Amino acid sequence: MRWNICLHIIGALTICVGLCMFFPLFFSVYYADSGVTPFCWSIIITLICGAILFFCFKDSSAGKGLNHREGMAIVALGWIMAGLFGSLPFLIGGVFQSPVDCVFESLSGFSTTGASVMTDIESVAKGILFWRSLTHWLGGMGIIVLSLAILPFLGVGGMQLYKAEVPGPVPDKLKPRIKDTAVALWKVYLLFSLIETVLLMFGGMNLFDSLCHTFGTLATGGFSTKNPSVAYYDSAYIDYVITFFMLVAGVNFSLHYQMLKGRPLAFWRDPEFRFFSIVTIAVTVIITVSLYTSNIYDNIADAFRYSSFQVASIMSTTGYATADYETWPAISQALLLFCMFLGGCAGSTSGGMKHLRIMLLLKHSYQELLRLIHPRQISRVKLGKTVVQPEVLNGILGFAVLWLGLFIICGFIVAATGVDVTSSFAASLACIGNIGPGIGSVGPTDNYAHIPELGKWALIFCMLLGRLEIYTVVVLFVPEFWRK
View (cartoon, rainbow, N blue to C red):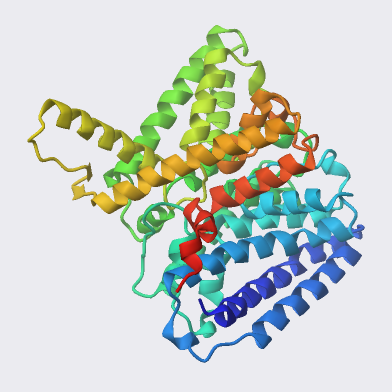
């Protein structure tokens, strides 16, 4: 483990975070709010610390590239760094009295979880709210991928960082050079961000709110600038625009790239996209019928509008809300809870276990049943026409066990702090799945402010686990990782 080069790159990432703080500073100056001084100090502190790490820690062997252990260490420590320095505007600005709350809100942003401890959002300075949403947008495609796109001068191999950061079991390398892949992904991300911002402005949002809700949508984060979330606007047009882009964000971004290159059939040829589409449509239809027949809404159009929005929000792990789904029929709540486990597609900005893993686990289970019936039969799990290698299946099985195990452990920890059982496990699921709202006291109309500090630290850890796909973080606690 070459700590010099690791700290050197983490310093570069810290500088990136500091430079990004200039954007919310502009909004604070424009609105003449109380965020100007906190951002000035936060920028100074962040840039100085980043510069110290960047210039004081170098390694003459940097040109040899990173090994996989160094890549995982940089990504995990880099995200922790982002969460800590990203909390400075909240701390210096006095938004929260507790440092734990500042880190919780910051890492919830960078991890695109959207779980909040902010009780009165609309009373907070505009610049602070913009930073809160910007952390989503940066975390969505990934600070690491961003750094590969704009900091190629580091002179290190990027694939180890990319593999460790990009969500999904198998990252798509769209271009021969990893820097070109990162640039391609960010171009798609920027294009969709621009389109959604313009469409939301047509719906009556101002530029500030359009940008903040776009950041929360495409990053599948869910931070809103309004206390009632998207329900504040009570607009079918805005609901459908955000619904569409939440679903877009829940799909593998390499498919969007191929579509923009003139290959739209790539969507339907992808087995995971078909599975994602079928599940999303089926759940939406069942919930729509349930809401209409239960007289929750007066007509089928409203039932579809609210059900499609909430299914897209939960399935993509965005976490926006236009209705209190805890008042819906039990079958509707059960289906939304089911969606919390699924998440979006591999290679998207969504959290959760990912449809690709669920699909392969189901295929593997079916193959095991066939082996019981025909012990001598040789069969392989396939994804489309491609045979899935045993090591990939083993990795997915290990991931599923760790994901469920850590979710349960975190739920017990939160419950031990005095939170009721339903809310404890809902909060754990919502954080490790990077969803945001859960059920119980952390439902769509509530927040996480009431959870004791120990519970918040456990949930912060869950957010990091979920965003970096479990292995990248957990491997740091394995003694063999640090041995030569």
